[in-house]
Image (cartoon, rainbow, N blue to C red; front, side):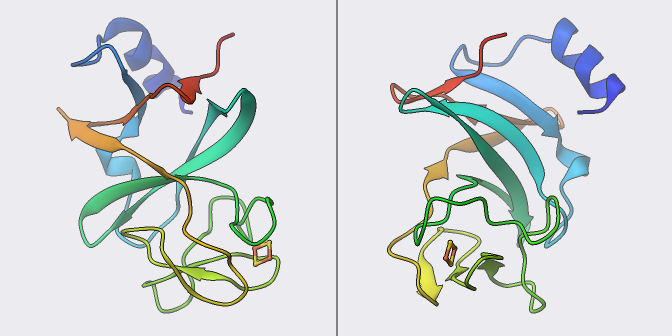
Length: 136
Ligand code: FES
């Protein structure tokens, strides 16, 4: 998180109380690097990531459905060379960027999707009963 974005978080209110600021909209380039963030999922602190694909932001837990390992092959790199699949670095499972559905390799189901929305140039993720922000 950049210093400017950390300052923005301190001064802005989210449009709804279950939304949590994640990054600036312009931080996510179509098919480019992901924006990482931390969540508490089922009581465990987990890494998550947001990407932009065909103009729309999507977010997932950074946890492969094959083995519960983080997937990026270099920090924040999730897209394969086609730019149309997310690839797990460990054994090559492939996932659709827009739904998280597994479409190749040894994955055992979809990625765990996190609801996101963009508002006034900021990307937010939405918490749920089993998905909460990390408290400091
Ligand atoms: S851990 Fe992701 S493909 Fe095996």
